[in-house]
Image 1 (cartoon, rainbow, N blue to C red):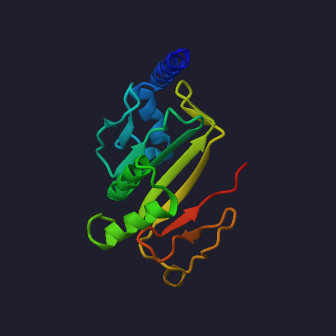
Image 2 (cartoon, rainbow, N blue to C red):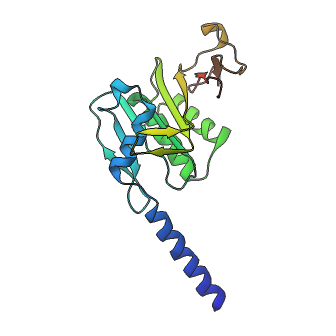
Length: 192
């Protein structure tokens, strides 16, 4: 009985801590849009978290950017902004991750769904920005240990069609997932 009560108390404590850790919608929005170029931040849609920790739309957008707030359950700050045409692909990825389907299997499912016409993927280039850091300070609007990388989605692109290498090299752009609907150019500057 003591073990059961201890487990219940731990679960309640964890739930309360998780609830308390969710920043306000304003703070989540301010942090999420930091990944986008400055001129696109004000009009970006933002998906974040409710006080209960559920994913919710925090702000509807008025431009082409769609941003994701940092997950309050994660220790480090991690936000992303991408062109709204990528959202069906990204949303499906979040659904599969919630089902504990990750890595190559997650990509395989999405690529099959794109080929079958069940999942929409833009035919031209679309941009994704990813910003990570140790934490976001809403008072200063700064991200500590900020690291920004860029991803340009070029569905079905190959090394032959683009001239990009398919091998990662620090600071150099390279083509990842060559020849697939999720092919993209990675640009990761050297870390400081």
